[in-house]
Length: 316
Ligand code: PHB
Ligand code: FE
Image 1 (cartoon, rainbow, N blue to C red):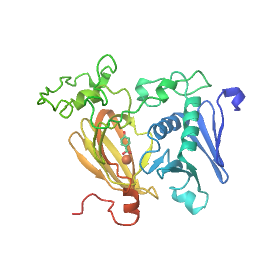
Image 2 (cartoon, rainbow, N blue to C red):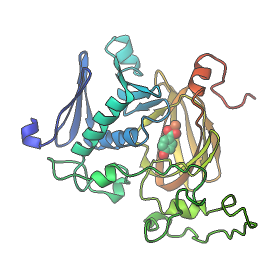
Image 3 (cartoon, protein in one colour):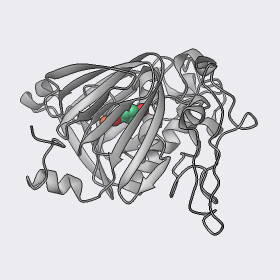
Image 4 (cartoon, rainbow, N blue to C red):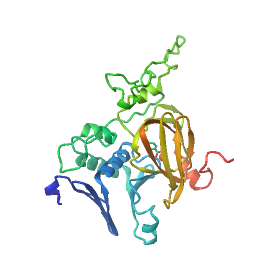
């Protein structure tokens, strides 16, 4: 179907071409073409845009994705797919971050209809399908929570209240009491505490880590999960996971080939370190709370690439 029939814009970036119809995103490049459910495509695109290309690789699926070089971004087709590589059909182009950021943000806004929220659980949003019908700019341009010190500290990210963030339907039983804080005079700006479970129970998005504490490069990025992580993340550093509630199953694969490495089911209280040379995708059967602990050091990818840092956090 042409743009005239569906109302959606088409986009070009380098030699890649993007088109959407009522159900699908169509991606083509000089040596091939690809088709994805527009549901999956928009959920992945939303995260790539909101996270500014994240850490390392964001695979939209087994074929298409981006690699963050922190200043430039590779866009690829078949780069991490053994069959495409063997057939020499893979294609990679590098772009300055502002160009791909702008193209992706414009495409996300144009292709998202009024009732669809790509960050919401599929149980909490309308479907993305059909011809163009309005837009949902406020949802696709949501401000990402990134504390500079900690949520609740004076001048930093605010704790959440009924007025701004109602408790999610799945977290109705989460206690909402806040800790009492009695700083000594002069330390009001330095001593703070908040109820992280209450904070997360009020999240209206899924699979969207937000930075709630920062200590140098140590970033606590908790998130609430329901259904499937819409990207397959290829790590360029170790990531720690702490399962705060309920359960998530992770498929862990070799980052480059996609061959199976392990399947990890994490129950409340479980802690895991994801190695720096894997890709992973999570499945959360009930809305759950996950703490992702990131080392934000910009030096890590190079240290790992040159063998100066390990892809494991500890050797036993
Ligand atoms: C990850 O790739 O590590 C990741 C991304 C988003 C989440 C959770 C984990 O919500
Ligand atoms: Fe990850």
